[in-house]
Image (cartoon, rainbow, N blue to C red; front, side, top):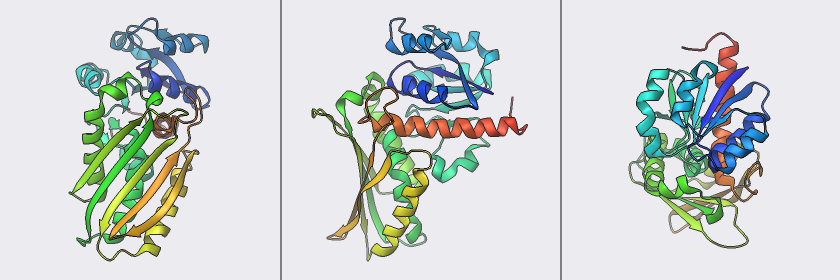
Length: 295
């Protein structure tokens, strides 16, 4: 069984913990945070998982019981802890928008990511919309028909923890950079909205594209095919609005309903990034079982 340590005992880390606990090929051997009174650490102990408020020091202390480290802290904390992570030489799945490791979106580049020591899971908005943007951009490869792409991620305010709120700037820049990388479109933008509405809204992500003479039938076919592929590891992911054309602008919206592992189902922003991280951890576990683990 592949042993996973989670650092970061907030919303993302706790949601990931629940998912790992249900996965046969993975075992959470350490759940580390820095607040001894955090709910996440209490939950880990109740689940029978070794929990510590020692943060990065706990990771070092338990290094011999770890195959993969999942970082669910913050972009700043990840950067500060990077020298220690590098010394440990463990597989690293970074769920913060730090941009340190190579961007990973499982549906787009999981095979390449299997060769990397550290991967960065972009952002929740990036996981939700960049595959759709990629599906559209593939139609127009080698042309300059796509003039602009914009992502707007709207999440319930109550699903945004301390780390998310501190990383709003990193979220927008990291998502924009990944959008450009996976589409080849240089003129891009990313926006996040924390919606305070009660009852809370589900996570919704809208992609806007300005395209010269768009082939709407082909766009719809590619987008629907991509949605089906994402649903293989994010069950609550679905197309809310099929691509439509208005004044040269193609618009489409996806929605993510969470599995309610930790926060309620409206927190699809947690679900999609922890599902993506879990998918890659399972891929690493398969590699390790086949004798391809690295030290």
